[in-house]
Amino acid sequence: MSIRVVVADDQEIVRTGLTMILDAQPDIEVVGEAADGRRAVELARRLRPDVCLFDIRMPGLDGIAATRALAGPDVADPLAVVVITTFDLDEYVYAALRAGARGFLLKNAGAALLSQAVHAAAGGEALIAPSVTARLLGTFARTGPGSAPAQPIEALTGREEQILAAVARGRTNGEIADELYISLSTVKSHIASLMAKLGARNRVEIAIWAYETGRVRH
Image (tube, rainbow, N blue to C red):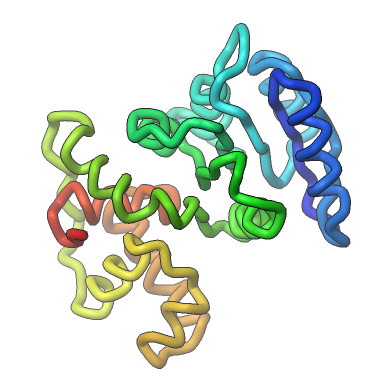
């Protein structure tokens, strides 16, 4: 089964390039393209792709607003969104991930990282460009909303604290399993428990919570 992707970017040459890179992958298929955020949201709602790949700066409705419309806290059945941009700015990343994005990449990331991000998002994981991960997640904790982070509905276990820290540092499930000498299914079970206890909908929200509560520092 191919991973179905909708690509949105207001620059035709960029949109075409992203589409060519993704379509060249044996298990990825671009099923729709849009030049602005409103069209992207319409397409995504109609086609229900596995992953949406959105530029941040688009006319009409920008990529952050489009992400919020499809994956925000109030969306009952959110789609997986990866945001891609030329601009390595803290506020963009923070806004995108807060809006529900499952990944964040710079346009100079390269074809391999783009493919990884799409695969990660489709698989329920998250990929943030390595050049921005630790620095920006740390920044989120300092520049985010002033309200205190929500407390877990039940205390975290020692193992959950370990996995929380690993997720916050951008580790994949496979890497966490290797580091902690546990099975992949055990990692997934702990992450599901973390999401339930923290009220998080994905691992990006788990990571942000870890930084906001000071459990992870860089």
